[in-house]
Image (cartoon, rainbow, N blue to C red; front, side, top):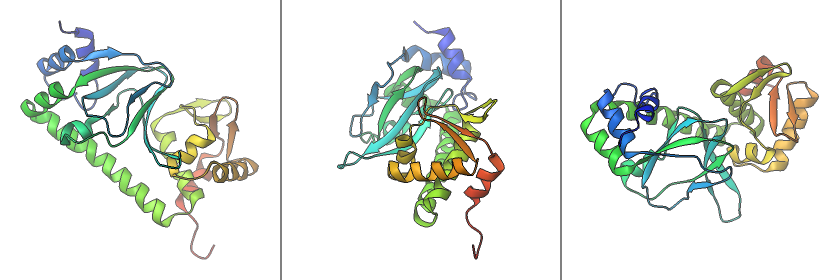
Length: 239
């Protein structure tokens, strides 16, 4: 039985917004709602790509990344309400390229791979929307690769924080705060760096009144956004 409300929720997402109502209903009919517990794994690197996930609601996030043999982690992206993830393996039929872990409270729609692919095959608008979404993610990935090759760690961290400010932040009396909780180790995972190096940078930024960090709640507040943007721009020639 089709879930009319779920069809409406999916239809409001950018990826599906240009599809006809019948396609939304078809996706909703095949999908099911899931509300995983905080810390629950959705899939692991190497798993079969059996579904695409849509983030419907919730104050939490879904963290996608990959481990290495030394128990370090690389955080590839953090997905929030309105985002779609898990599509890469479904599209190319290869095993999952990363882990997906729930952080906080999220409500998801799990769309089986067969339903998603059938919709993509019959709705050209979905193919175009997928191309645009993947192009944006590819541009970001290329930017991260370029930064990892050429930019100092402080500049890379500043660029990540500015990116997160633009995508998901909250205005508070203390300044603009990243909406998601980021432990210092999480920030290190975003850059493939050590926690110690991130702590050193954050301490320097706090001394310069660029940021404040709530260690207990793992909230990062940006006190001087123009100043942080200047750090993200990188050092000037000769300095």
